[in-house]
Length: 138
Image (cartoon, rainbow, N blue to C red; front, side):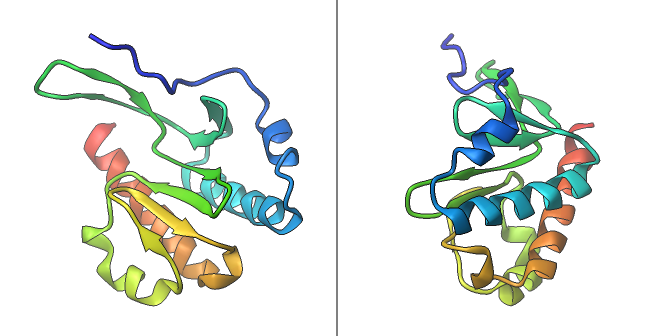
């Protein structure tokens, strides 16, 4: 069985955040970091070289493959900020309708900048996502 490529590391979250070249993206990521810390009550850890993750859960698929992954997290990408909403978005329609300008993948919320979304709604989405993950996995 293949080993998960992205795992928790001992790398400094502060150094990662400070290394984000774009000043506005760096500031936005620091706000998102605070939102996730507030939602989880946990300190951040680096997962791989570019994911800031909070708390964790263990999963196992029917195939037997499993691992650990952050309950929530984010990454500063070249084109956007990826925010990991692990349960996906289907249960959060009302919040998504009020969030603002974004794109989604299966469990990734992509924003260009924090000013494009309603920060209070984003905090509610992160809180709801963390609550759902803890109900399911803890």
